[in-house]
Amino acid sequence: MFKKIKLQIENPFTSLIIFFLTGLLIYGISLNGEFIWDDLGAVVNNEHVTSFKFIKQWFTEGFMSGAGVTSSNLYRPLATGAYAAIFGIFGLKAIGYHLISLFIHVLNTFLAFNIFKRLRFHALGSFFAAMIFLVHPVQTEAVAHIAGLPDILGATAILLGVFVFLSNLKTIPSTILLALIFIAGLLTKESSITLALLIPLLAFFNWKNYSAEEKARAKTLIGGTLGIAILYTLSRFTILNFHKNLDLHLVENEYTKSLPLRIITFISVIWEYFRLTFFPVSLHFERAFMIYPNLASPWGVFGLITLLTCGGFSYKSFRGNKYFLLGTLWFFIALLPVTGLIPVNATYAERWLYIPIIGVLLLIPAIYEICRTVKSKKIFTGILILILILFGARSIYRNMQWADSLKFYENELKYNESSARLFNQTAQSYFEIGDHDMAIQYFEKGVAADVNRMYPEINYNLANTYFITGNVPAAINQYMHTLSKSPNLIRAHVAMQGVSKEIGNTNMEQSFSAFVERIENGEQINFKKEILPLVETAGASTQRTN
Image (cartoon, rainbow, N blue to C red; front, side, top):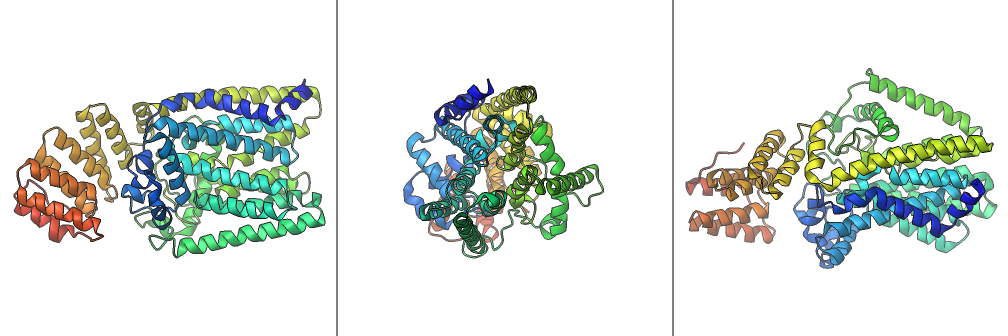
């Protein structure tokens, strides 16, 4: 029986069809989902995805700058290009973006399956490992979220690069191809830089099987990818650094200032990665930013024990078949960009496990190698089928939430009641269905939660809602709060131009029209000197902002 199944799944066409049909079963419900959360900045409000004429801006400005997000220090020009290509076909029909994400996820699964086989793992074990990669609930955050496209496209570059490296070390074209794949990955998602470390890891794993020529070629490829990684890093610190640092935090805090604190925090959240990998029950997108001051906590102790245990088994594996060592190092290398070496805007996230989880899944075909008898193989296969059923059911339920924005946000609010962004997104969902009272309630909560004044769009959205419901003084007040946070937000100036016309204030209308023209010409507007006195002089009902 096992031989017949093995022959079937080793057929590339058969395995690809199985992966696609399974992916459609798991993610089919999310195809009905609309744009949600960061999808607005990535696509809906992003002028740069509407035409290829903005290709210069893709490469010279930050990610989402086309949506007016000037605070982002992300650099993903090819991700923007991918959105532009999809926009050219589907416009703002969300189903098109979801379909592309599903196809890419299936492709990544197919690549993972072939990588497992290239590592000379058991075919059936490799197939089950790939299937779990496909249906694992933790993957839904990257796949069902349209703004997760850079995550899965960057993963494609990593997996394709690994596959090319494992497939052919004897030709110059393969060397050039690998370099191009790596560069494309870096221009799609920053975490693709881990390919430069995964290649040496895989070379070490296979070293004894290489010929002298292959060893020489492997050294060339390792040196080349490391060189590209160094050049990319230097560029990101200089010409491609839009905020003079790589910190994704807009506000400096104790976490951003202390590397030891960030490392301690990472060790402490290893528990969360363990839970998400093996018990993916409490899934949600917006997570509270938790800082762990020391390791004297249950989570810190768990993290230390996990690291020591992995280290012990890896050492033992090093002296044997190296399977556990390979899986452990893959997991932590793939997580390296979010360990806190460079401050990032969260302590952990589900989507960050998209590639690292392969390190854990490598153990599945490795265990198949250990199962020598038919009985043991049947038992292990039964366990894997049960896991697939449980994980698949959990993923379907999670995709149902991604497909319905209100269900999605209701789930989020169970875990986080202090996120300004979450309140803003929840309010927008109520606004879209015409429940303006609930929208105002959640927008106001978002404004109150924005203690660091980082999200002017919340005030802007609240102002729009007030204006629609006829509360013009409150609308003006919130537009002013918006401009106090972001004086050059052109949408707010256009809105104030419209409000001025509504209340019959020609002077103020003309002034905001002039502000719009100046911003379009690249000038900076001073809120306290130019905007605030104008509105106060006009007698508008505003409050002086902090």
